[in-house]
Image (tube, rainbow over all chains, first blue to last red; front, side, top):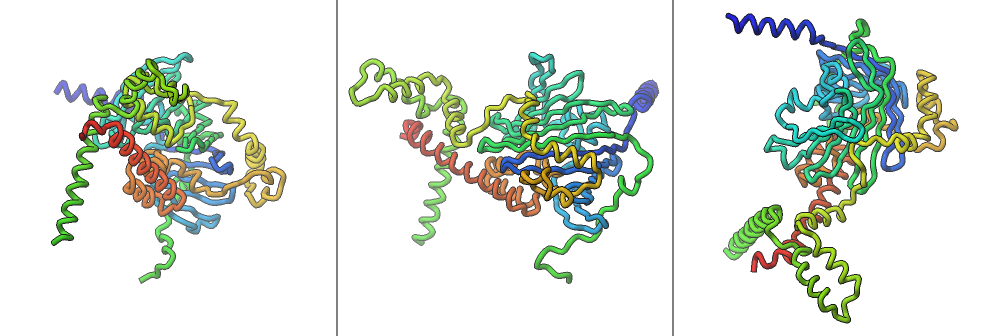
Length: 242
Length: 211
């Protein structure tokens, strides 16, 4: 009986202080510099609904269109919400910056929870010259030892400052930098995220995402947050309906 | 009958080589096998002691360098680096100036688009803002930048998992030709590295292991 009371106490404690956030909206501007020398600019608004794990981009540049990423499928819709294209992606919204920020797990990139809990284990914790806490995570899941390399993280004041992904031979694959954190209604979110991916030929792709006007737990705009996923997939070229 | 025998013989040879390779690799990992660089070490000492007229100083110094390699695995890593050059980048260090310089050309366009909501590419395509920019409009690639499994670039999927990796990339990118091509290059690099490894380490360095 005492254990039960203690458990109820613990749960009530968690619910009292561990506030759950469920929605995030922001103006987004994504700049890409590709290794080919080409640039990309993508501007619009991003909406994330945590309960349905739906990620929606309402873009106006380079052209007005809506992109929905849900359940490993990406849908492109035109201005009139007609399906332009769909494709399978392996983005897990559960590990998007939006979901991690709303869940308060961005500090360790959610590496120690959810589906990948148990895949990585802390190998080393140290401090660098700038006072950042550098944590090295190594793969402990046997089946993934030959595929995944270590991950290094830098944290300042318990906020994720940078993360670096390596391959199994300790070559740097990509790294991300999280800058200009703001606290909106208790959600800590970086206004600038820069990702650099390194190619084997020594070139690199850089993507810099800037967020503005972050809104948390907005009421309204339900039609966008819960944007219906197109039911009819486009027929593939060369196929005809039976 | 002869056909069957030759197939069985070829299969047996393949198994033998694979087994040898695995064993050799394990020994190399443990530092128990002489690699090319490692086996040259004693020769370097000989060169130092009594250099011949044919050998140039450059060759001698190269040999001395190889002689200083204490761990044979390091030389393997070094040879891989030559095959797939990597940029010397300090991890977790944000070089703001360099990043800003990369986007210098794009910043003006971004500023204009942000202050004029609703602006599309069609509105600015012929203006000075976009004139000198080589603009790519593949939005899907932008928002799905990390769409490959585990955030690993296509090249490495091919390089690490070979043809299986190429197939994974082909499926998950919904038959994206560019990504599949990168994975294929990775696969080819892996084959090249494997062949080099086989030739240099097994046939030359590890010759004593077999004979």
